[in-house]
Length: 353
Image (cartoon, rainbow, N blue to C red):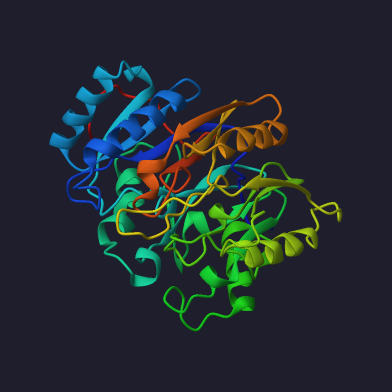
């Protein structure tokens, strides 16, 4: 019997998972700047599907309730769950949904703070805590020892998976595992039979060792949106051109080349200390009937919206200001996790578990 297959992000969803910024995270000194971004996210998502918001504790949950009420968010679409976390990048430590001919199930991989760079013990326990709290419709949570972050992979829904060699083969994650061993694990755990390894491409300021969700994303089983750099003087130019050529060599499940859609690279954005921040339009979030695009107050925002409108006909493209998010080296997709259809249980308004 074939292994259950990872459900693609463009499939129907039951909700979106967020971890709200809190005073014990790296956002402790910039909560006033980052919370409006999360409120904008919640407003945009709740128009299309429910949300599950992870709060640090009950006091934090009450604070979020006040924020949601003040922002006139439809609280009937938001469920809050009190589970402590190290940080907000739930994409990388939340559960993934797989499906076979019979049913959907949840799998959870180990998370080590991007190769041991940051504390991660609380984050690594979030998925199990959510399952124990009964927020998912599905029984149990399959735990796998492989260290794997959600932002490091993207599936086309018919056996293909995009990832980067720089991240998945990083010695800090799964020491001793080579490409063949990892491919076998991805086949066994996620039903992947074609691993599309990107050997080139990076976004300066991304400290995940090259997550693919900053570089190239599936929009359908046959379409990929990817980051292109037009400025030959930019530090990304050569690597992203090499990545583009590699994408052109990949074939979909029908044996045809993927249809490629180039997203512009935003103009450089710098931190107060002069470090370039990871602004990328590829870090978009697909939800039911819409796509949320990270916006950076850049003239290229409009072009990126137009590209995604062509990639996702029939879905609304909603721009969300993500300048505050990239200050901590992530963006919109990094801060959110879609929950496939059939995963999220009924929303209970304003009740932290």
